[in-house]
Image 1 (tube, rainbow, N blue to C red):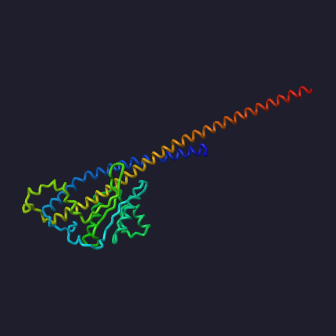
Image 2 (cartoon, rainbow, N blue to C red):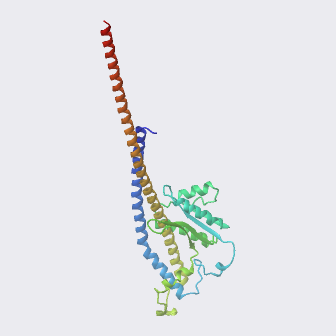
Image 3 (cartoon, rainbow, N blue to C red):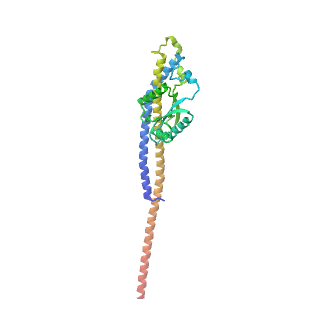
Length: 316
């Protein structure tokens, strides 16, 4: 059994750790709120882009555009070259956040015959690099504090590779928040855009296509040119939303992990306090026993000495 000093030192160490976990919990909670606010502020703009593309596709259904999967070449069967973007964290202490993303990414890559791997986040780069995956060395982006500029830079790179026919599709593996307590890993296809996603009934209901004749619907400079601009901005918005969602999920996972660590520390402190009191009581009891034992021994010694003196007086 540990002595009182050892238990006291351990209690102090746990209390110091609790200060860190509580501070990290507060910081993560503020970062989650900030990220969600950023996403909510930009969502109306990109929902507007989505509705605009739905309207163009409804009025001009014959359009076959590079950014969409409605081209004849998209229906052919061949080994498609995929660009796979994996979004991880820059650090740990976020529960199973990184492990879940990396596990899903490995499973997805097993089904890809030809791919180019792009990793966002230092944890993912270390993981894939140490296991011999061929990751793009110059794709060095952080997931911390996502910005629309970062999303535009990544979009420009992916679109350039896509236009040059170096890749056939772009997939992003990231974590999204279901609610404040749970997240899940998702695989989102960014390019080509799925035409059926823009022709859903709920989007059609927002547009009265019969109120405007096809000949009266004017798009400048052309329907294809409009789709080119709108789709590019929409892809940028998708990537920005993914980065923000992943960052919010990371901080939410870290917040839950820090709360769990704080709760466990409090439970340990409770058990250690009980053990400390028992050890201290045992030490006090031991001291009292030793004092009483010493007093009894001293009393016996005095009585013995007194008896010896009486025996000596009687002999005289």
